[in-house]
Image 1 (cartoon, rainbow, N blue to C red):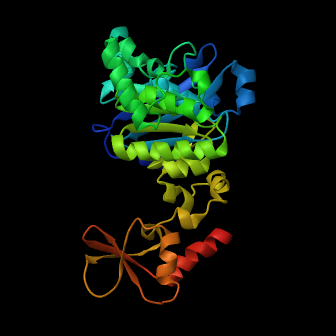
Image 2: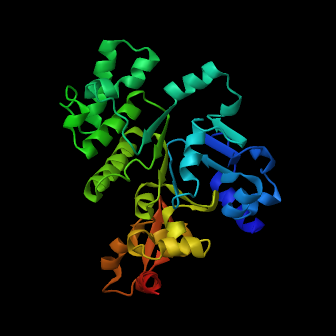
Image 3: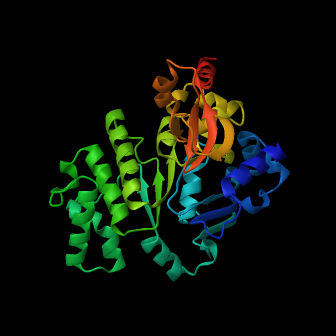
Length: 357
């Protein structure tokens, strides 16, 4: 188990945290009296009910470490009670950890005086919640500008910046309306606009779309994908929906009982689940829409050239199918100006056969 946890730690933290936008080290959250005594103890590994009966404590997050690079979308997913919401709320210190370290751009969040912590919350970090939390007596433009008001920005500039960001999220012309006049999906767009209005470096999402209807939820996921292409914020996104995680995440952390059990790219998690728990999560995922040429290729190193057709390394298997269906010829997989591998019909069909097993 120690080796498995070491692998998870290495994949979550990378080689160096000096350039990380967010870096967390050894985070614990223990609820109950004398929670600090549970940290790192043998009791911490007891089943939740047994630990509660023995100590009166509940461990929500257990020794979690990870880094998020600037501009990366890092998704944490797990079932209810896995600790994912507690984890994200420690990153801006809505909850203080029982033990561990949180760094924002290299600055130790737990060591900050109160005035500096407020400044970081106001200007560097924003959060989008599942429940919109809009102020019903305020117009939409004023709801969006609330964070700017807290920053002390004057009313005219608040209104101008709020209207600009409402355009970004597709709500141009709705600024003078009130929350009750908007649908649930539109209200969540207002919540997203409010988070964007302060131009934060880091955006935290705590299951923001789980209360929405499926079609609206899909639209909001598309909105986040589009926004990320345009604004390139660092995002930490919490969800219990694997398909949402696969769609949004550059990397995904699977969480269980307060720990990360696997961290990797979407295709790594689907192609190489770390254990039965992750495999059970991913068994119904349409692999052809997640796996890429890089995942199924036979590695090769060389310069692009010759007559063989080429495909980018990030081409999904679904798009490879028509290219190999009627031929036994090989396709060169390219990354930039290098040939990094070869795929053919057998490789593509093997990946699809594995999906049905």
